[in-house]
Length: 179
Image (cartoon, rainbow, N blue to C red):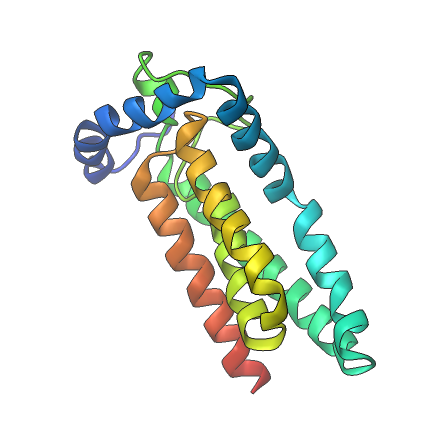
C-alpha cells in the first residue's frame, strides 16, 4: 500500500495543475528548456558549494566560521526537508497529471516541498546578510531555480512557495543563532 498525501494536497493539485501545465508547456522552446535544466543542475549542489567555499575568500579567516554556518544550516534544512517529503507524500505533478510534461528525471516520486528552492532561498538570504556583493549574480539564479522546478514539470507552485518559506526560515534562524 503506497503512502497517501493529505487531502489538502489533493485539493491544491486540482487548483494548480492547469497553471503548472501552462508553465511546463513553455519548455517546448529549446533555449528556455536548456536554461531551466542548467538552473536545476546548478541548484542541485554545485553553486551552493561554491558559495560556501567563497566565504573564506570573501571574508578572510572569519569566512571559515561563515562557511561552517552555511554548511550546518544546509544539513539541518536537508534533514527537515527529507522528513517532510517522506511523511507528506505529495506526488509530483507529472505523475498525477500526465498532461504535464516532465523534462528532467525526478529523484523520487514526491514533490513537497521543493528542496532546490529551499536551498536557493536559504543561501540567498545568508548571502544577503554577509556577502551582498554576490546578490546581483545570485538573485537571478535563485529565481531561475524556483521557476525551473515548475517549468520542468517536477513541482507545483505551492511546493516552490513552501520550499522558499522553509529556506527563508532556516536562514533567519541560522542568522539569529550565530548572532
